Length: 96
Image 1 (cartoon, rainbow, N blue to C red):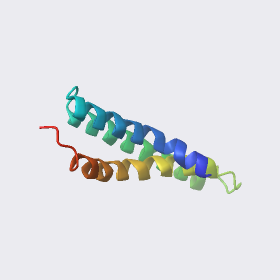
Image 2: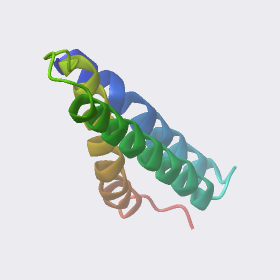
Image 3: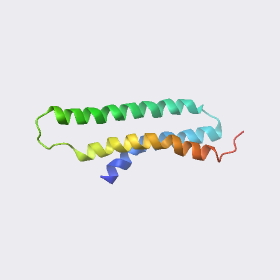
Image 4: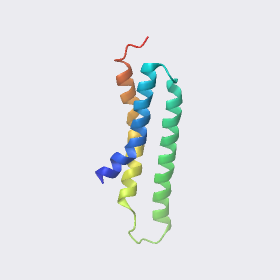
């Protein structure tokens, strides 16, 4: 299940790393990456809620895929953690 959580975190942390790189090289404004990260957070939350609603809408057959829940929880958690990590790194960079 840890592999699924890390796999779900991949998109948010790749967006975070690309944002730091582009900030350092002054290629793309960082607010574009904030939009991408926000959209990923909304999509992951939607998928998780849809997964849970489908679980409770159907008769209990105990077929909730724990790996899929771990994937989307990893995506949500990393999307919430990435801005804090970004602030920590940016406070150390002397670009300007």
